Structures are given as C-alpha cells and as structure tokens.
Image 1 (cartoon, rainbow, N blue to C red):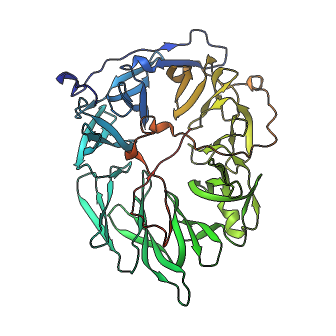
Image 2 (cartoon, rainbow, N blue to C red):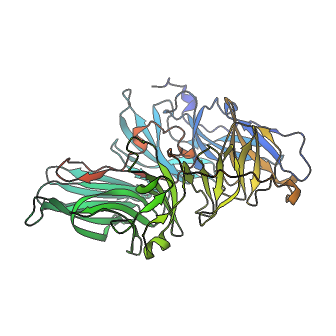
Image 3 (cartoon, helix red, strand yellow):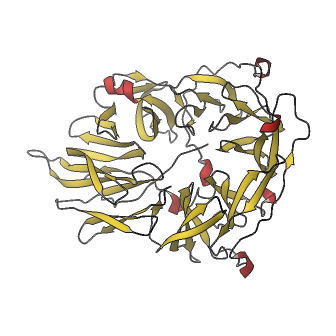
Length: 506
C-alpha cells in the first residue's frame, strides 16, 4: 500500500507545467520532434492512456494511481503537461479499473489488495477536470466509453444470472436469465468498451444425454446486452458436445462448437445474425506448418478478422500465430484456405493498416486486405493519424502512410503510438513522450523515402501475445481482464466470468 500524502494532494488542482525540449536542428522539409521525459512528470514510471493526451500516471507502484495528467503541445511547439483536477483521494490505494475517452473507472483497494469501492469518473476536457458520477461496491463492473456501467450478478441457489446496467445519470436497469435445464449450469459474459452494445452473454439452456447414446450434450443461446439492460437473443444451437467463447467486438461474436461425432466448428456471428464458419469438417485454414486452428478472434474491421491461431500438430508449442482472415471469402468457401501468419498483429485505425511482427522479429505493415506494404523495421508503432513511429539501426523517426520519413531522427530502442499526434520513444531506461512540430513540417519528396529492404521469405513462425499500450499498469492486475474459456460437458463445471475486451496495441 502506498504511503499517504499530505491533504493538499487530495484535490489536485495544480496547473504546473513542465516544458520539454525541441530538437534544435531540424533537417530541411522534416518536422522537428518535441519531447517530454516521463521522469519530469511527477517521477512517472508507468501510465495508462485515456486517449487524447490524457494519462493516469504511476510513480511509486504500477498498481497504485498517483493522478491524472494532460500532455499537449504549447504555442512554442513544446510538449507540456498539466495536472487534471479530480475528486479522488489518491493518498488511498487507488488502482485503474478500465476505461478510455471521457469515462473511466478507478478502484479503491484495502491493504490486502481487495476491491472495496469503485468510482466511475467523467473527464471534462474543456475544464480539465475528472469528476465521479457513480460509485459502486467492490464487486466487478465494467465501464463503457459512453459512461454506462455493466455488471453480471449470479445466484447459485436459483441458477439465475442478472445483467445490471447503470447509466451515466445513475439510473439502473436489468434483465435476468434463469437456468431451468437439467445437469450442469454454465454461462459466460463478455463486456465491451465501445460500440452500440455493452457486451454479450453465452448461456447454456439445457444438458443431458443424446437419445440412444451415452454422449452428454447441451443447447445454448447467445445474447446481446443493450444500453437499456435488455438481453436480446441473436443465436441458438442444440446438441452441442462442446461450446465456448472465442472473441467479441463492436459488431461480432466468435464462438466454437462441436457436435457429436463431428469436427469442431469455429464461427463468427455477425451483428446481422449471419454466421461465417472459419473452419469445420469440410475445410481448414492452412499455414506454413500445416493445418491451423483458431483460438480467438481479436478484432473485426470491414469483414477482415485478426485471428489468434495455433498448429494442433505442434503439441509442445505454447505460442500463437496471428493471421488476417477475409470473412467474405470464408462465407463462400472454407476449403483449405491458405493464410500467412505473424508473431503479432494489431490495428489502431479501424483496419486501414495492420502492424505486424515477422518471424525475424522485424515490424512492418499490412494494408486493409492483408498485403505487405512498405519495409521492415526494428520496431514500429501503429498508424492512427497520418504518421507512425519507427526505428531502424537504433534511430527513431516518424513516417507517413507512403513510408516517407517526415521527421528528425533521434536515438531510440522502442516506440509506441498513443494518439494521432502523440508517441512514445524509449532509449534504454529513458522514456519520452514525442510529438512533431507541424509549423516546420512539409510533405516529403521521393528522395526522402527509405530504401526498400528485402522481406524474409518465411514469416510464419510461432506467435506471441501482443502487448496493449493502453494498459501499462495492468499487465498483472487480475481486475483488468480474464482469459476466455471453452466448455467440455462432463469434465468440468465452470462458473460465469467477465472478460475485458479492448483495442489491443503493441
């Protein structure tokens, strides 16, 4: 538990500003890079991004929030920070729950690390203030970017699940499901941070022996959770031997299912109710090492899905591959479709580009259809706006979407994108916020485009899970996420659980 501060730190209304350095010598037609050291922001060591230059900062412990700051560029082109005024007592043990944009959740914990109170705050960017709009007990809740809060409450005695939605104005609405079947009771809830829906529930309807067999099977439903707390059924299936959650987002739900004496089926359920099979007994995805199985669908944009995959034939592999699947193509045929896999894959611009890591540990980009574009770098961040940060041979700079270098060069060992004009550059233990000075920027000509480098012949090797940039302080925090579960009837009884779904970044 972090040390208590003086009472003056309770309501942080400071407007202290720390100016940062701007590169003194800008190349002709290249933007100057303005930087601000993390250590100059109250000794910040970790952070969680709220978007638009707003960050929770952590100075003493990666699990205890010390305050909120706004990073912006002043009239001189320098990066500065301003403290955001809040009504939270940060001398208590305050952790980050979830959230981004204008609404986020903080958690007050006791000395043992148990959640005792939860706060949902609204960030008013015009006044630079974050104010509590709703409070809750310590039980798990999830906060949507529009200020709605959703919770799943279960009663084991009555086998009832209640989905409770609290609006930004504090009004509570709910819907319930009760299990009336025989045998095991199982459900799984998935909450979303953005979009028209607040999440989904996959719900077992009944279970028992299939007629004239000793196979234990069940039926299940899939529901959407809307902002009025209603559960709207969008899918039903019968006689499933296995089924489970395998990913969800603003416009899709992914599940796996196995019928008796049939191959496992993996499918994406679209918002319009249509189903796209990713693989079943009629066909499979194929990678460089043979048949691929899908574990999760991480994101869907314009019918292109990021799939976390693995090779069933490589039983000792604990790493994963990432492939970009064309759902329109899969809706027409799933007969042995070949895909290219990468060690990591993310998008931060709704599928216009994808940041990928190849088998050699180099970073590059795919276009909206999965074609490799540009060159490979030692490290790179996503495109959100016009530019992305990259590193080659220990030098970091910004590139445009034509892969022209458009900025000065600084020493760097790692880069990340936070917003359309705010980036993170690391150089060893030194971490900086970085932006560009547009007043000195000009379109790069063809002579400034980096030389093309040969691409590796084989980029399909075992995968690793990519690191989200907006959860720096949450990597080991059990309150900010949970893994998906698949159900095997007769082998285990699994309780329902909530899953955090959010846009992943490197």
